[in-house]
Length: 279
Image (cartoon, rainbow, N blue to C red):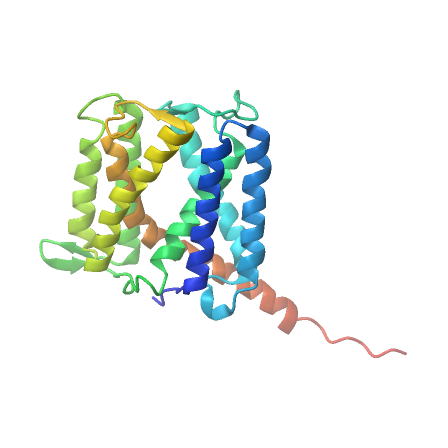
């Protein structure tokens, strides 16, 4: 599989976008109208700036970027809404537009799309230079299955850990143990390369640190069992498992969106009937 690549300017742009939203959270998380205007404005400027980047900098075409981003909002925001609003795994402590429908403000749902997009931009960056994705699993020292089998394993581990945290988010051991087991299984069966392992380790550290800043500096949200500056152990393990799985599933989904968009564009331009001469 040809792996998409993103240049240094694309990575800097997405990093700057995440940084700006983070600064806005620290300064005005409790002011709904500021966040409701500020976060979409940052995203809009990010889209405009990204459209001006040369093709060599982008891992996705301009035409596919918006539908792909909206899908990421549904994936990331939908997961957060399910965890927070339906299962009450943790709570947002900032104002929301319609708390009866969603205790998560709309700007945060949009921000989840940016977070997922940044992870992919980072994993595709020439800075990390991650090798292509593997096409098989490793079981008892033998390579078996294919890309579909790998995707099913990642999805299975994701669903299993989400279901476990819905039921045991207040248990001092049951909250994090399934995530530790799932991450261990993922490392053994998916057999990521050394650079991906370093990315997972860095994410396990940086992800909770950022959340600790949001919690302590802005009072954005509140966890049960928040032992690490308000962040529970299971979140750190979840960040590692999530970045490992999202690098693969997100990349394959990105290629699917790109393929879905390009044929329609070429069909309109190549397949359009010739214009009739004026009579």
